[in-house]
Amino acid sequence: MRDLIDRGLMTGPRMFVSGYGLTISRGRAPSPGTADGVADVLRVVRQQIAAGADCVKMYGSTGSGQDLTGRQTFTFEEMKAAVDAAHALGKRIAIHSYGPEGARDAVRAGADSIEHAADMDDATLAEMARRKIFYVPTIDHNRYYADNYKKLNYPPKAARDLNAFVRRNLETARKAFLAGVRLAMGSDAVYTMFGENTRELEWFVKAGMTPEQALQAATANGAELLGMEQSLGAIRPGYYADVVAVEGDPLEDIQVAIHKVRWVMKSGVVVVDKINSWRANVRAGLAISVCLLAAATGMAQERWNPVATFRSWATIRSLAKLAARFNRACFRSATACCGRKRESGSRPRRPSWT
Ligand SMILES: [Zn+2]
Image (cartoon, rainbow, N blue to C red):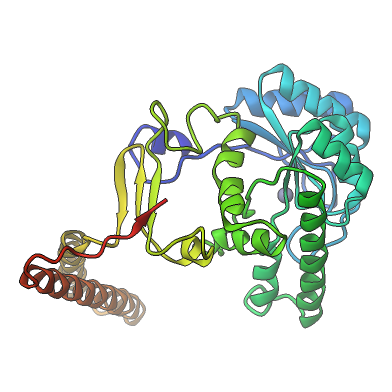
């Protein structure tokens, strides 16, 4: 998917991928990321990089979803071997640890970033600041799990535990920021959470950052953590033209950056335009109408079969709903466009840039 996007064959974000994360053998079938012992760790790191990984991820503790145990998994020696093997091949390594022990050994081993960790002690934070190791706290994904515990089939107790972890995670982020540790924004990209990823910025502000510092954590710091600070994370000559326009001032209110994005440019190409979208809506409406027609024709030609018909009807209903939505959006943008033309001399309101 990364390569298809890079070649322009698919629309999507600029991806930096880690392939399989390294994990010790733990109660499930081994994956290509499973490694036990230093020799295995070296093999898996090299194989993932050979397979095209941009960076390496290592699960240095338990903890994921409703599991908040955070018990260290890989030993210090294994972490050191992974860090050295990744660095020898010019790649960065992120070490996952929910608990403080795995984070402490990951810092000693020289990881480039520590993901998730709560309850890190002062000595570990001081060492992170000294070695310029990034902390990627990913606070908000646990808020998301807690808010959606029913949908995820977690028991009510899990929601309480997750919220308690969020509080400890936030406290650790606050301590880390005060200790001079640099933070980068990571969402943990939960596969059902898309559209909420930047809510992590709210927690950064709660941890004591100004909105500007929070935005830097999501842009300049992220670029530096990836080793891309010469081409990403800033608007400068020679950099990729990756720009968003928001409605309002995100330096006054971070919610503007989270909820009011109106326009997105990637590599100089506009990929989202909620300002001048009527043409896009017309195109989408037409395409959906064609699909609708094709589906109806297909159904008419089919011999009557209740299961197939039900499926077809369900498809048609959802397509019709989608078409109606686009048509409404099209109507709204068309009327807004005419309205603007009638106002002589007044320019349409443009969002501020950031
Ligand atoms: Zn992780």
